[in-house]
Length: 202
Image (tube, rainbow, N blue to C red; front, top):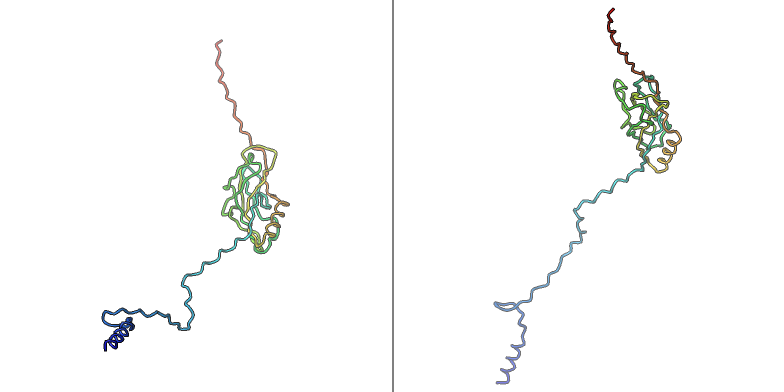
């Protein structure tokens, strides 16, 4: 009889102790992900826009322009227009600063261009459009023997580098053909002061 009791106690001691119960230890079930077969949602972050590609551009120290003053005098107003012919498609020329060479005979004086005549800085010349004239005014301040040239800087934007090179080569060949006409400034004459005669006795 004691042998049977010992066997029963051995069986009970070896039984599984992981079954749930009040105060008994339990092994947590493994978590499993359920798949629905649908694709993962797209990310909600916005895509960065690509940087716009800059067009080729060059600077002209002397734009190829032509023109002449309306009339000769101390104050003169010269019309200026693009001289280098048709521009390649997509090309835009923007006039910039104006100066005179030499600059010791005339000085810029825009008031010589009366009315609403357009100044040259900021004027744009585009391909396949009629060139528009602008105006430069100047005033003679000294005598000289040289007619000063009107020099206008320009920025050129092109569709291709080859187009920019063509415009640059044409500008070098033509240069500026706008001049102010140098004249003789009137000399100021001062009337001599007359010394009153002193009457003499006798």
